[in-house]
Length: 298
Image (cartoon, rainbow, N blue to C red):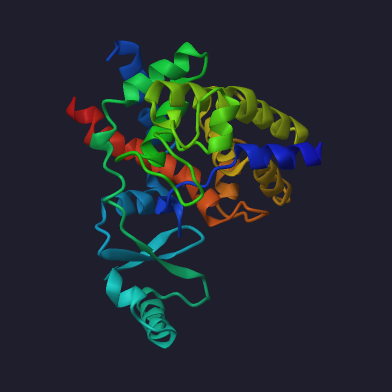
């Protein structure tokens, strides 16, 4: 079974763009409910979510120095001043900031560049209802379509260094597995409806079934309609079933509900590292940004 999980992980996994590094009435209701649940659970107040919203609105010429474990922001700097400094100069900056903020321990402090150039949700807003409809026509909650569209390729069709492509950032093997043509002449990953079908099938046949199996294996009760379960499924979509299983196994006492998702934010195992930890944080931030930029203006 572990071998099968590992193989499935290699099939499912795709590495997204560098952004992850250190209209029908019912569809509109789905959009609104997404952000409402985040507010109701007060996840919008978490430092991690606040941090990524800042990054989504920050120009690439700037960066945020932050405590990596919880993304608490301690300073905003010009990117060249941070990335252009040598190690000694960076340490001097950090020492000054620690004294200024009363930080007495030695947390890992990192710089993260602004990515407003990537998170241009206005460019994908006309496709969100279409994606939701495509997923729901295949029996999958349209929430998943919106989540993928908002953080995988929200500004234009792009190909990652690993070869993921299209609005749902599918790897060639995954796309072919669900009937899409991908060769040197044709790449149907660029076809929105075909790509949406493949992504919904991936969620339906791999991600959700493995989420059920993993949680049941840890005796964790779940409701598939709850936000935390959907976020868990999205971690599988991003990192692969095998890597999420490794991360789950690395947690001594897995929490319940959203607490489990927070534990994953600080868990590293296999190829489940920083980009994977950030994934559900980005989803939460993206839904809130979309609410402010798009939903409230309609």
